Amino acid sequence: MQYGPSSYDRRHVINAYYQYDLPAGKGYRFHGGPAVDWFLGGWYTSGVFSKWTGVPVKVTESSQVWGGGTATIGATDYMVPTAPLPSTGLSRNVANNTTCSNSIFNGTVGGNVGGASGSNMDLFSNPGAALCGFNYIQLSSRGRTGSANPMYGLPFWNFDMRLGKTTAIKERFKLEFSADFFNIFNHENFNNPSLSIGSPASFGVITGTYTPPNRTNSARWIQMGLRLNF
Image (cartoon, rainbow, N blue to C red):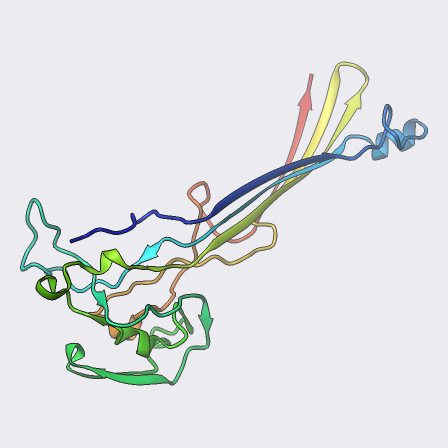
């Protein structure tokens, strides 16, 4: 009845790491006098690139699909697509979408559905048409809920980088300077929107950015550091 991919099913994930030391200074290919070696030596850079595809997103029917929650059957479940799944992605300037009529909405929906909340971005290029591509769960005729055939949400990518320099001060001391750039390109990653049949005006509307678990903000961060090793 509820066979389908898990809620955390990411089909493709890539994490890449690099580190590069500038081959300059004393003991390296490019070197000169003490002043030149002091200025050019010890520079390095490193970084982490992460990218993954979206997780399943489903259209919720209501909080009382089965007439009330029980210990064995959840109260919330997902609507069944009646046509090929609409394509998902980041669609900007959504307005004047095709209207469509479906009895489950008790009338006609569409028009400016995607821009109703003011964000002007939507998961669908035509949210009005996408909204009408789903129907109530009918286990007697379909045998499954919408969990069996979900859409996939927005992808994510991020690049963090460090630039640093280690300078030797005589034999016992080393001074290390570092500059860390989190989300160096200030790339915007968005949260998956709400897909509730009970809120057609906000269907697919994107309202916020995604913040990674190890961060408190999704925008670019720059962090400087100075450390003396002895």
